[in-house]
Structure formats: structure tokens, C-alpha cells
Image 1 (cartoon, rainbow, N blue to C red):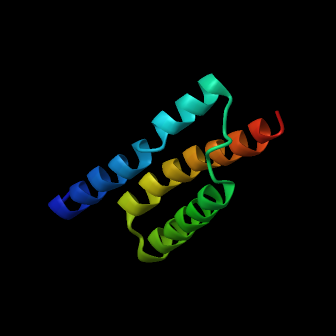
Image 2: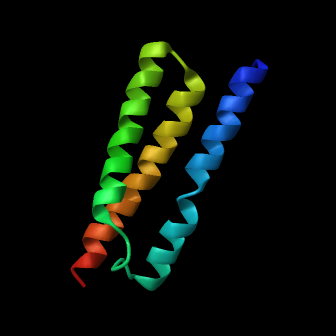
Image 3: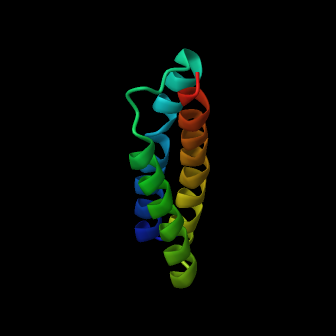
Length: 86
């Protein structure tokens, strides 16, 4: 692994991990009133596009980190939709 790939993985990891505290908070409190579904939906769509971009460029740091990020953001979107009903 070269320095550029390592930097890409580190940056992607930071971005990926950033949503975890929000997921934990929503999971514990079951409150999503202050969280925008529109924002998380656009973010999730953008992450999916980053995965496509990474695949087209064969850039594994982009593919790996954004795939994990997509999964985590989909959890958040699910929580927003599910807990909004309550």
C-alpha cells in the first residue's frame, strides 16, 4: 500500500466513523425529530455515487470506506423513518 492509498483509507475511515455516534444516540433515545431525513437521504445517495466512482476508477480506498459508510448511513435513514412514526 502506498502513502496515497493509506491517506485515502484514513480520510475515508474518519468520514465513515463520524456517523456512528449519531446512530448510537438515536438507537438509545429513539428520538429523530431534530434529524433531517432529506439531508441523510442526499448524503446516502452521494455516498452510493462515490462507490460507483471508486469502482470506475478501481480505487479500493474509495470503494471500501464508502461501502461501509453507505451501510451505516442506510441504518441511520432506517432509524429516521422507523422512529419518526413513534
